[in-house]
Amino acid sequence: MRWAALALLTSPAWSQAIVLTGCTVIDPSKGSSVPRSNIVISGERITARGPAASTHIPRNARIVPCSGKFVIPGLWDMHVHVGEIEEDWFPLYLANGVTGLREMAASAKNFPRQRRYQDDVAAGRRSGPELFSTLFPMDTPPIASVRDAREEVARRAAMGLKYIKVSSELSRAAYFAIADECRRRGLQLTGHVPDSISVREAAAAGQDSVEHLDGVMLACSRNEDEARWRLRANRYPWKMLADNFDLDKTGKLIGELRENGVWQTPTLAIHQVATLAREGKLPAGFRTEYARRDYANAWPREALEFFLPGLDAETARSVFALHRDIVRRMEKGGVRILAGTDTPNPYCIPGFALHEELALLVESGLPPIAALRASTSNPAEFLGLTRDFGSIEPGKIADLVLLDADPLAAITNTSRIHMVFRRGRLIDSAARRGMLDRVRASVASQTTPPAAPRQD
Ligand SMILES: [Zn+2]
Image 1 (tube, rainbow, N blue to C red):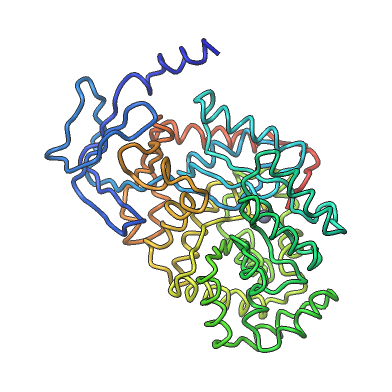
Image 2 (image 1 turned 30 degrees about the vertical axis):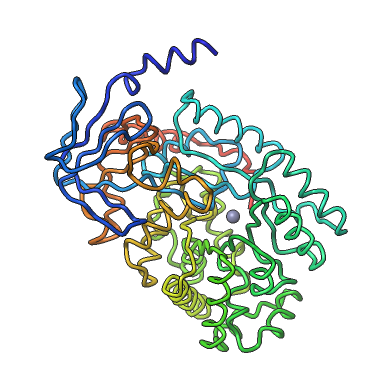
């Protein structure tokens, strides 16, 4: 323990203040963009921020000239599956400015590993994004009785989980018992909307976040009941849903989601992949040189099977267009949005996919500042972490991304990364390049891919 503390004190990131001078600071929560600013970082936290002309620069500080640079808070990917902590993925997240992750389904074996990783990151013993984790969804293995459902929530609460994931197969009785138990214990209820439940029922029952727009098209359809019946009989109703989209129902649903405080993680990245797969347009421009070989080998097949099964290309296109339109209406209607990607699902490559998701949110009609909010201040607020994360203010952890161009002018500029700060440690351009090169080399050396244990 003692040596760890000593190592922290002697590490350069902790002994010398760093000052970013003359940058434009973007604050997504306030919707502001302030040019000619200085940011002072001391240890792992921001200690000052203000006009370049008047912000005190500590003696012996390291000056990083940043005129012409745009600084945003570190980005969060709010839907990932990091499994057993892949050594190759964490550099990809960091090099892409992704400084926080919400794991959505760790196995019983990987959950303690992820915990240990997060403890190490928080204590400065290793570098990587923040990681908040939950266990496999409540229907794996299937939960039969209400009593079992309540007991399982209690067991997970005792393990210190902050949120519970639900998934498609839960019975109505089990779902409502879980929702009730989460409410009583102050746990967040997140995940899919079970096929047996409507989104409106989930909203009323207190579900905190809905992933992948699950069940949303059903709730926006004129023939929701028949479509639900078909879905449960594995007779996929996508075309029927697209043909019977109802704007009035959509408006009402959006009002209920807003009133009940239900956040949405649309994961448009996987919707896009599902569409491109049906159109035969993969791998498009995806950065597969950074993807584990065994995963990438399985992706052409999986992209056609895993998400919205039974789709043809034309229906995929219209469903994707409708989903994007719904996301735009949701954001306009006051529903809170979280940026999440579902890495490592097909072609969702750690780090890179988040920039893809931001671009898709803007293509859907969100202003760039709203897309940034969905991956900075909204995640901090959703996870109850605003004391430490989500904006560039004195007292907060110094998680920053310096960009060469204005992301409010074009959201794709979030990919034009100059430097990243993670808990006050600088990852400069050379370090970033080194991280990316090492992962590419590691992937290129994977000649005999091991069997991939997949998680959803
Ligand atoms: Zn997922």
